Length: 166
Image 1 (cartoon, rainbow, N blue to C red):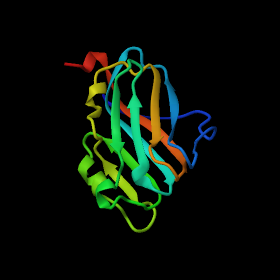
Image 2 (image 1 turned 180 degrees about the vertical axis):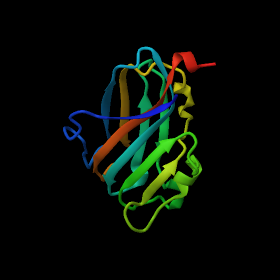
Image 3 (image 1 turned 60 degrees about the horizontal axis):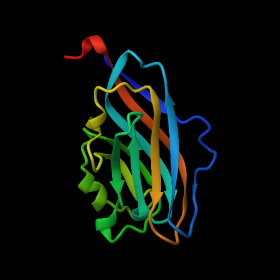
Image 4 (image 1 turned 90 degrees about the vertical axis):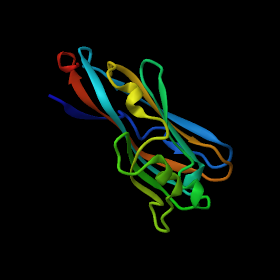
């Protein structure tokens, strides 16, 4: 039996500001425990970011084993670049919208980028690993001048009892 688990970041509201000015990053650690005898699949990430130029953003997720996946690089970049405000997305491998769709999106009203999208690199690299340990989601602001606030970040996965693995 598969179960979807959403794991939020404890104490999230501390240090969640991307400062205007020089490029900077924020890394959020999600401690995951209780899955020592369970492997996972279908990792997903939810992001809610208030930012005044969304195409300045890059997002990554890193598993406890050190493997890292790029979720997106400069969403809306092919749309101008997108100078619209805010990102509200769910990123997972079987989303209907592609990573290219994310590059081409730029709504005129906030959020400029919204919906479900596939990541730049497949999250399936995390399939069948043990989820226990610290997961890291990093949001990078790669350009000068604009800033923002990371409102919410969460991580999801399906749990697969090891006896169900083929």
